Amino acid sequence: MAQGTLHTMRTLLSPTPTRRARSGVFSAARLTFVALALGCGGAAPPPTASSGEPADPSAREPGAEELGPPRVYASGHAGPVLDASFSPDQRTLVTAGADGTARIWELATGEARAEVFEHGAAVTTVRFSPDGRTLATAAADGAIRLWSVRGGQLRAELPDQTGRLQADSFSPDSSALVTGGADGVASIWDTTTGGLRRTLERHEDVITSATFSRDGQRVLTSSLDGSAKVWEARTGVLRVSAEGHPRGLVLAALSPDGRRLVSASTDGSAKVWEAETGRVSTSLVGHEGALVAAAFNPFGPSVMTAGVDGTARIWDPRDGTLRALLEGHEGPLATARYNRQGSALVTASRDGSARVWDSATGELRVALLAHTGPVHSAAFSPDGELVVTSGEDGSVHVVSAHTGAARVTFTGAAVPDATQD
Image 1: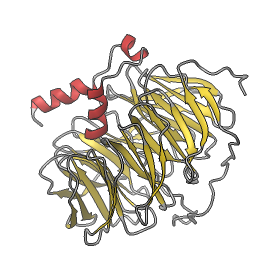
Image 2: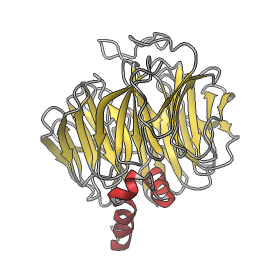
Image 3: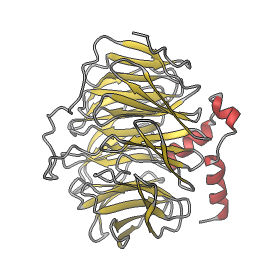
Image 4: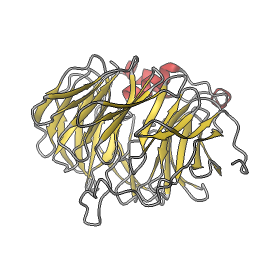
């Protein structure tokens, strides 16, 4: 990696001073770089039955609750909220703030749990483990921390990472977390002890995404060196190196059956590869500018890409045919994700809006216009009924994925009173 590029990355990802972080000051340049260079889109892992096969996509997640009339609470964050994610049981929500904290909220009551998960820099992404017992937080200074959800105890701090987590960064059994380093080395960690299980060496540049396969047997990594690599999770042996992009990758994702992978590049192109051989199946070309997301539909033969040109596109991965062009945003996209059921996808933009689309037809289902500034994240609930968005304005909105009707809103900087209705 060129020293100038490495210096630029470290500068943009370096922690803001504590005083600035606490006041919510977080530069647009750093936010843009984290979103574009490290990737932030994809799809939540689809639910699986005990056999390991995909569960019925119409089945509701256990513990999903009807939230009743719309309610408004204070967010507790001082400044922008950079990420928000539902817990696996859909009873709680975790938010990540530019103020250097992550917080967990009870959706039924709007109450904040007592634990505050702190970093010395802006928290860029937050993820629950599949079993809901572990929380992983990633910060702009590259640190990733593992916490006990109940009690908030810090289990481990994983330094010198790229400060980004994907939906599949946890292994399916929740026992491990895979992370990517600025040195081109990926690491697999024990989520209970924080101990290093093994390293995956190496890429020639910064790793931009690192995820487990659905069966937990393989790890997929992507890098600014332009390659995607498939590794044996148990041994760390490199199985496939998919090389051919002239510029760096922002992320890569495996198909549900693990037979193919899609890579997304800073040059605006994506490629579909055979995961067993590293042979290119097809190229997906049409975006103008870098991509920010790419993922296979969890239950259908299609691939989604999204970019800074403000569009998302749905492709046939077998021959590269463009099936649908999703237009309407007036600014760059920050993320795009499928729901677990594969029936819809959500896009979030710096134009202040998020949009839910039909994944089969590309038709707009609903436009979500609650934010007054750039939207940094958007994600579906496990059952696909809700969408949560977070933004530069410091607010978090939980809305119906079908109508856009508000369910719960977190706004402002004060921690909500525990007695508030």
